[in-house]
Length: 459
Image (cartoon, rainbow, N blue to C red; front, side, top):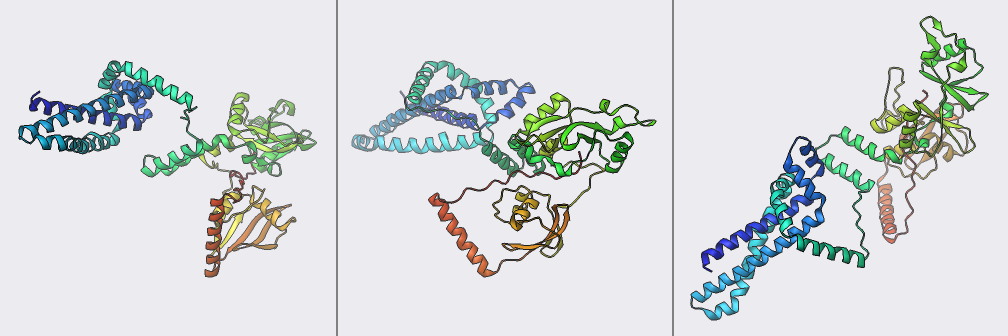
């Protein structure tokens, strides 16, 4: 074989090595979603690339077999080429002692730069484009090398069975949330789209008790109430729906819509039992994705959440569920209240119907409590029903009860004191101790206070 032919074969082997390396990177990093979008636009190459990516094990076996074959061939011919040059130079001893070493070193450097690093870097930047470019030739190699691929596939399955290796290709919820964070940081989606995706991922984790409107905030009337009084309640509350109960709110029998009470001629003359729509009754632990399907199936706008004794714990509306996806939904009759309003420097007015987890995040606190709302936590700390003017201190906060509604705390004033240098040093030492405890596996588990839910007075 002449030196010219050897050079041509080595160049072809190097080119194929680069092709196999780039193809491996392209198919391992491509987005199947992008390929499906291209398929919908009529791109046939995208369809072939997607088909190959769905059988990645066979594809990978073919790539590895082809890559190793061309690299071995390249190394062998390079060794012969170098030894031949040395022999032609009348230096047989040098060829015998160093020919193979020089060829191996040269091939390793060349393959590493031009057969691995460079093609993989190019393919990584445009994986879908290179996958579509290489797909037809790759399909041909799969057909040619199919006997070897089948043998290696059976060997892989045997090894997996012997060592009991199970493939786990499912993406966890935490991985999905991290993926959204990465895509948002790259700028592919904005903050609002990122929030919507995170809400959708966390949607199935929420339960009815996390988003309900509590019974103390419900508006309704007794089934014996005259139609004139019902009309007045609708006008005063400005709600579109009111609950109907028998004897007490623990026995809700239905829902009445304002459009059924008011007609073009005034109040309806129909009896109340013809205006009532039966509600959907659910347990507090029902997941909201299941609840959404139940509401759609029953063509109902709200569900009554029952406690363990069969009494009314609260209600969940279709609006409550949708707000878990898209955020707060306001209409022209909703009263907009700031949950956290700074009224002076380091002094805040806090709505106590808010979520305790958000309160901890706002003031950078670590509170262990069974309560979900700020109001519940305050009652837990004070160990009594608070009254206006009651005060207590917690860490660097001074808390004063400013408004109450019946037995509940409506608003508080919180004064935040900046920690002194000594306190900062103590906190730093405490954090270090906590880190050591975490390393030893002896730290306490984080206490889950639940998901934020918006307190409402509307039905």
